[in-house]
Image (tube, rainbow, N blue to C red):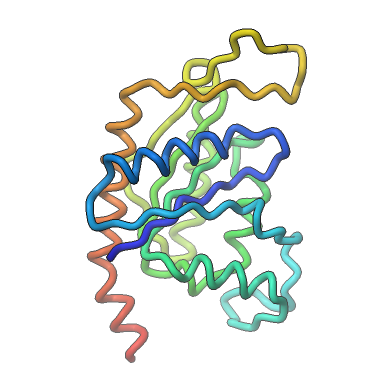
Length: 202
């Protein structure tokens, strides 16, 4: 069975990413492609410090148990969906840090993107597409783009409080976008499976 991880990239105490990822996971399990297993990986749950390994991930030298734990979790999947915010026109630092910890675990797999932000998180995804190419992740075209103004409800909330996070109320059209994204990630993950097997056996 093809296994796809939804990776939550924001680690802020008050974050919208977890509710977005919860929706994506529930929707995937309800109406996503069949014969696919979906799970969530929350970067915040792995307590990764700022990259502290003695050598780049490409070298294959691992010293710390937190790296091994993260590597085992990532390696268990055939494809990924990054659920990402946009911070200062780019990828959240915690997500970039988590990606940089590994190399071979990402190779020759597929990835899609669910983004959110004032501008839908699209600039963070453009950054992630560049990063994905370097770590041999094949990124699919379809993207779920969520806007903090139109896909979140702030009724009755204190908008003067900078920690306020609205209730996630995505437009119905996003379900179709997510299903299309998952279909592409699943198809590409299956298509690349023989390549991964060939490289392991060689």
